[in-house]
Length: 137
Length: 142
Length: 193
Image (tube, rainbow over all chains, first blue to last red; front, side, top):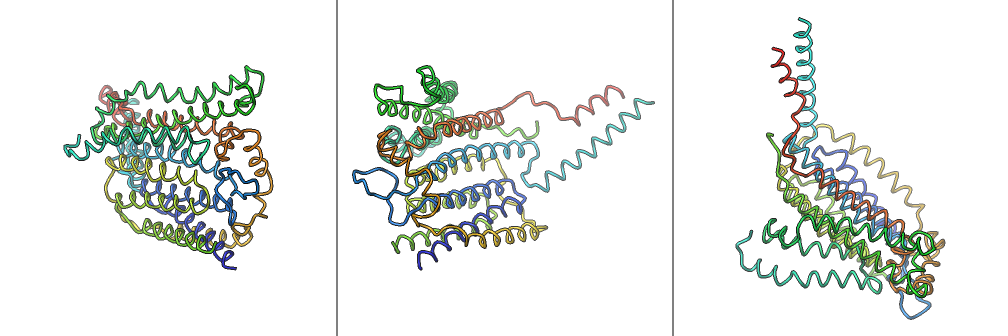
């Protein structure tokens, strides 16, 4: 009874964490916050996988001499182990993109950047119009 | 570079044990928790600590960038090479049974080599990432 | 048994508290430190769920290296997040609806810790037996990682390698910055005028 209640609690929190991560990605305008949101989403998915692999009363999946020991499921562990390392590599890639954006635009807020893009686009249209008119003359 | 003597002395004392622990995790991964991924990160953390305390230039003197890039690719090549070796010995890609005298010893050799390749790649990628981030010069106003 | 579950529930609640604090904070350094703490609590969580290898990786990678990378990147970025509450309603609403649907669906998920749930039936008994008899390595995670799923790990290694090379390419100091289109057009403009 208690274990089932705890199980539901675990799943609930994992899904809430997932949604907090998703909200940080789609709701916030700061790029660094978006990457942090991705990290949180990622970790909650890891937690979900590892939770599936748990067996009550089992030992960690390292073999011992006794033949009748119950081991927790090693397959999710393998999948998540590699996913964590790949996750930090992709996080670093995202951070380097943010650094490049900051050095080009001087800001990492999404609104600022789209406003600058809009201004630049209009300027470009204006200059190309002037250019055309001069050429035609 | 930090002027604080405690930090500098502690870094010098800790540097070797961290690498030793990394090697332990690397080669004891068959029997306990650990393996190439974790060991790579631990070894990289020793070099990153050195770079943080003594400065990026000293860190690059200790571990030059071209060696770093060479080892970065070497890890992947070791992993792929083990797979191709087993192909040449008449089995499928990455089946280690033929590498040793008996299937079990072949598996042991294969797993050891593969984990070593993983550790090499991961540690050098982490060092390269830190060097790239720390040595980045903001190009604002160019 | 019960104490294990209680510790589990406590740690999960701590993670929730850290995530809510992350939602509230606007300072970059607090964000980075809270992310590190989140990873550390997640590592403790993995230990209570019997995943020692994963806990090791999460503690060294998630709480260690990733924090260092965030701090190194933070040095070049603005220290404060701008506050604009303009249109957060729609994302929040969609997240709440999606979360409610997911929690509703979670009642169909198998209970935690049951040995009869489908994930434990298919291939894992073979792996456990094979790790003892065919491979002879006590750590099942290592034997599955390097031998049974060697292709998978090869791909992951190449992904890490590629991400590293991509970061090196992106952050290289290119001295000859190509001038942007606007100044190019200005140059042509000057020549014509």
